[in-house]
Image 1 (cartoon, helix red, strand yellow):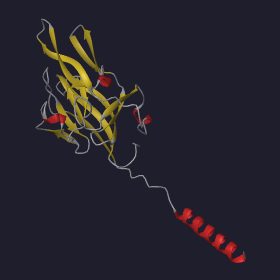
Image 2 (cartoon, rainbow, N blue to C red):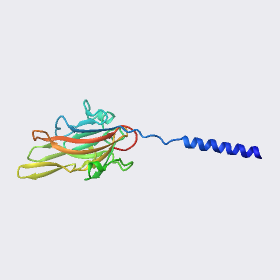
Image 3 (tube, rainbow, N blue to C red):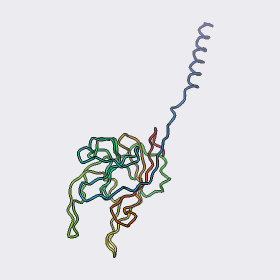
Image 4 (cartoon, helix red, strand yellow):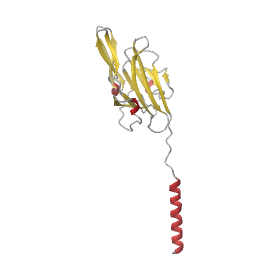
Length: 206
């Protein structure tokens, strides 16, 4: 009986020592942050500029067919329409969540769930000044009204809604995005500017 008690105490000690040495997994953080002005403006219709957070640059060579199977892009812009690499727009793990009009620095961690994948959108096909025609395309409805159109004495004015959007990327990472402008330095409209923070490591923190 004495030997049995000794063996039991010894085993308990080994278990406690193993538990004490076991540590929680270390979250590896690799946050990339950039402010971007797209290199050009897009035409009406299915004319999109694709961008990769991980490569920190625009992705060329994609069209309506190849973009649906490529994981090389995370977000795309057509005028004031936005795609994520998900759903009807792509085969990636993307999606978007609207955090609303909040302070950029207040979003310190991406939510785990609640992301909306891309679906069907009605976008402008042509605009002649005499009228507007629409066409069916793909995009993310969460970004609807990310650029607001207002008419003033000098004509239409395009104003960002100042919402912060949280995204999942093509490969299931996390990013936060703030669309900051719709004009180039010369004052011409149609040129998207945005800033983002992208978590290239593990976890959801920015």
